[in-house]
Image 1 (spheres, rainbow, N blue to C red):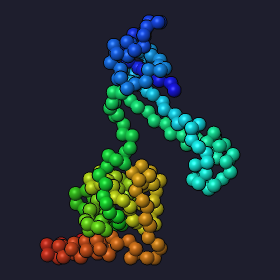
Image 2: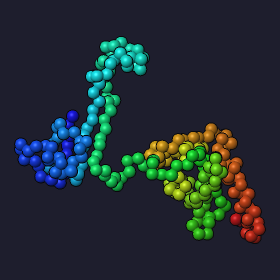
Image 3: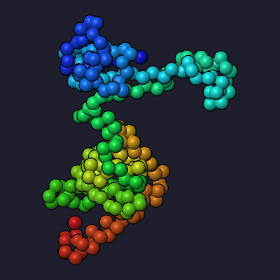
Image 4: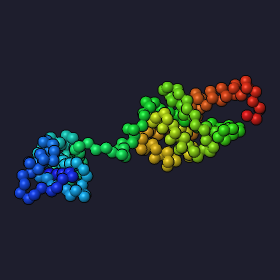
Length: 236
């Protein structure tokens, strides 16, 4: 195995005892001292130790693995171990380093343990403040929570979806119809990066998308009552 020690320290003098060198620069005692190389200060990261661990399958009995490989012949199992690319490899960093870019973006988003159904709703006239002509409705099938995000065109769905993820969280699955703007490449990238499942309703089966009957219908009824009680014109 090869080890690389990167530390803001001078390279050891030839003939120097490696044990004293590791102690002097506070290298942990658990770090193997069999073979190591001190990297140049200009090219190395501060205080970083990078060991590469490789799996040694020479001590693995191929006969034991036959039942996991469909009881293939012994020679086939040996060749599989020899040519496999699935050997485990780990990297240990000491001391711990701060990562400015998340390694797992899906873990930094609040997760919703429910399926969210979505569909747009349109108005007869634009709104007074933002000139919205419609709204994207998100309805949680478990908590029955309704979230609305206004838009000026249906093509703004990816932005509305990002706002929902930022403010509410990432659902386990997003159920929607087969509208093109709701299955664009931008939406697919969001789904893949956050590990969100895709669910689509069949054509001419709106009952498979619950947001239509449980959220949009209630919003229309409630908004009509509000417009009637406030004396809004019929054009609204």
